[in-house]
Length: 303
Image (tube, rainbow, N blue to C red; front, top):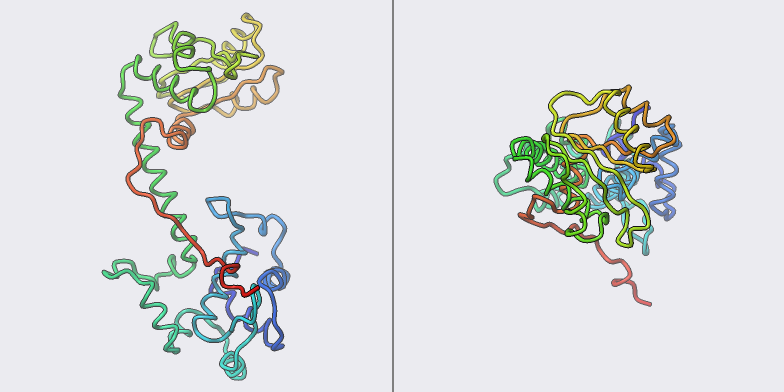
C-alpha cells in the first residue's frame, strides 16, 4: 500500500501506546510499518533532502501533534507514553484522529496558532497540505523553487553567446574538481566553436588522467549517432573517459548505447547541467538562507 500520511498515523500510534508503557519512536515506527504492511522499498523512500525516510518523518510528526494535544507525554529522553487524556480519548473508540479532531483541545489550538502564518494565505486544511508534514511542505517548496531556478538558468544558457557557454562549462568543471586551475581548463577547452566545445581537461589537479569533452547547445534531442561519433573520437584520442554535455536531452537509444560500451561516457542533459550549476554556485547567487533546527535533547538531560 502507499505510505500513509501523518494524520493517518495518529490513531494507530495512540493505540500502540495504549498499554501505558513507555515506548521509543523507533519502536513506534517499526510497529506502524508492520501494521500498514509497508514494503522495504516504501520504508526506504526519502524526503527530497535525503536526510530522513518519509515514513519515519510522518510518524515523528504524528507523535508531535499528539503530544501538543496532550494525548501522549514524554517520559525520558527519546521515550513517551500515553497520557490520562489519551486513555480517555481511546475509551470513546474514535474512528479517526486527525488535525480537526485535535482542535478540540486548547493546548493544540494554541500550538496551531503559534505555527500559522500571520496572513493565513495558505489554507492548511486543503487536502494537499493536510497530507504533508511541515518538514515535507518545506522541502517540497524548496524543490519547486529549485526547479523554477533550473529552468531559468537553462533559458539563459541557450541565449548566451558560444564564448560565454564555454566559460560556463569551464567554470563548472573546475568547481566540480576537474581541470586543475581555471587557466589550465581554459586552455584545454574551446578549440572548435560551432556553438559547441571540444577539448580535453584534467580529471584531477595532478593530471593523472584526462577527460575528453564535447558540449552542444542544441534544441533537438541528441541521438545515438552523435554519441557514436563522440565514442569514435575518444578512441582516436586513446581516451578512456568522456563527458558529453547538451542543453537539450538524450534519446533512449543514446542512453542505452553508453551503458553497453567499454569506454566510460557521462551524458549530461540540460536539466542536469542546470542542477550542477546550482549545486556548485555557478551563475547563481544566494538570496536567503534558512536553518532548520531541532531541540538538542542532550542539553536538557541532567547527567
